[in-house]
Image 1 (cartoon, rainbow, N blue to C red):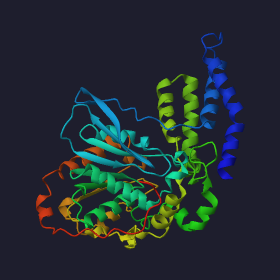
Image 2 (image 1 turned 45 degrees about the horizontal axis):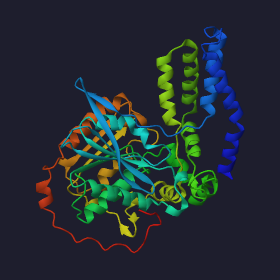
Image 3 (image 1 turned 30 degrees about the horizontal axis):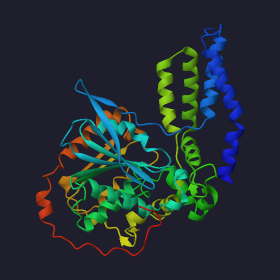
Image 4 (image 1 turned 180 degrees about the horizontal axis):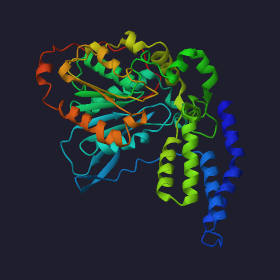
Length: 433
């Protein structure tokens, strides 16, 4: 009923949105004789505010067509290179570039679209061939495609690394640090020749027992059954995924806003004032940010509940009891893969220490192949976008990737004896791959 009520609420608000759109169009029309007078400015600003606060936001395009490097403009090619039931693998590269390091950027599946990492991709593609996981909105995935589990997420990452290897580097941002750690651990344990050269983990919940945030505390205050009863709903008939049990994106969006409501209220008020003043530059900056921030997707209920239970409540990975399709995950199996962790000093979602915990789990990674970066004054979103990302974090990641290139690890790799591949589990995933 939760999803159905949300759809009814949207329908009831349609006349108000229509009136707001008409008011904005009339106030800004060249045929309006009062167009340049204060009442028209007020009407236009009020109408746009009403429209933006009540409308549904679609997924935004990446929109990376060109980049500038040292004063030279380079065209960027974006292609979908692989499609699965719950994900598309997108490739970004400079047209004509060859031999640049290959990076798999694993985007979070936690409510926002992968386009939230637009700034991340735009920086990485300057010097790398970039592949990003573009997760599908679960409400648009037919029930015939099966469910999507946390284990499926890990298998997707392994498959993508095997497609792109053996000279690939993997970067995970926030939520995927755990499934990426699982994937790399399993590949290392099985001596998979396609395992990555390095992995960079940014602002993720490796061990949420360390400096628990309000998000972590909320998860531990309730049971898995409570979450299933209160936040899981079925997709309405108007969508392709009709009947699928999901954690709706609009609930996650409410949660995002509720973490810092005064900040968002202030931002919208300043936007209103910018519209009245005619400050188009600041107003457009606001629009672009919230067009992305307000665009959310639904998560398959199986994946969401398993993540809550195994990552945020039972802490399977740091406790050493994480399993994927019946195979135990052991990060100590990682020996010849560089490990870099990045944290923001002011991150209130994955607090400092939670991502750094990866170094303790990966006990057999040589010290020479480790790096930790704690960025002063940096919040969660600043880890992967904005000036701190571009000027501080990205240069460090670029250097780390370069130091773990094609030939750097040959000596280490030779010292590891091949291990027979583990017998495949008979447990089958319910998601079609």
